[in-house]
Image (cartoon, rainbow, N blue to C red; front, side, top):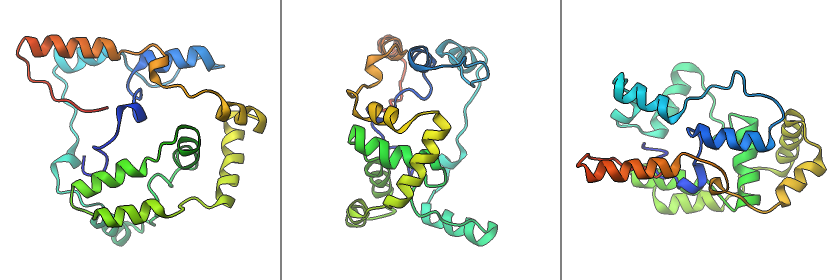
Length: 199
């Protein structure tokens, strides 16, 4: 919560929506999602409401300070700071710092830095200075692009075609969102307290 609570639904929707994932895959996928880990909204309801399974996020109960955690990990476990959020993964680095800004005009640093401002871990001025910096060197972008395209089985021309195609969002695919919103509406009418999160 301290570092990621501010995130627009339009930027992140779908990571838990199996109807959405399945619809995108049916339209563009080439293999069956046999071992793909997932659950439906009905399974989630059964686990949380019928079986009373509680999802616990212990870090949300701590006074979580990003810099203090980084210092602790470095001092006690030899962790090395990769400087930029999500630069620990080649694909995520390329997706968040190349694909999202270039194709969708989404800079997720804005959301993550906003969360740190709200939790008093950095100032707005510090955040604005970070936003101005170029965090992804061209040489590394090119190296990562080669790696990612090879992993995804795409040629450069296929990738460029995707990058230049019309922008779509989760609203262009089948999702559980309308069902979730209707259910929340009825639960509110019945007097249930609903905690809203944008994603």
